[in-house]
Amino acid sequence: MSRYRVVLNRAGDGGFEAECPEFPGCRAAGGSRDSVLEKIREAILFYVESCPCDRTAGGSLDLDIHEGRDNLL
Image (tube, rainbow, N blue to C red; front, side, top):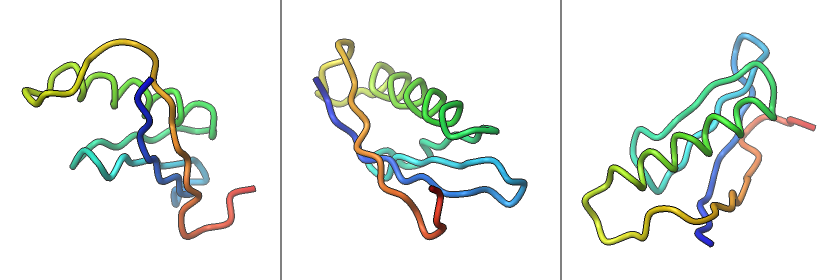
């Protein structure tokens, strides 16, 4: 199982934004926390599968979620 750090923030429109600092430009936005986490998981999987680096694609993926500068809970 691969584990990736995800930073979660409130968006200006009331939704959420997430980014994976390990992969430049790997970001997602969604109307709910669950929605944005699902989208960032898909974005990370796409990045890993498309990356010409030596990471192993496939398998399960675990998110290490860090709340951003805003209070989210």
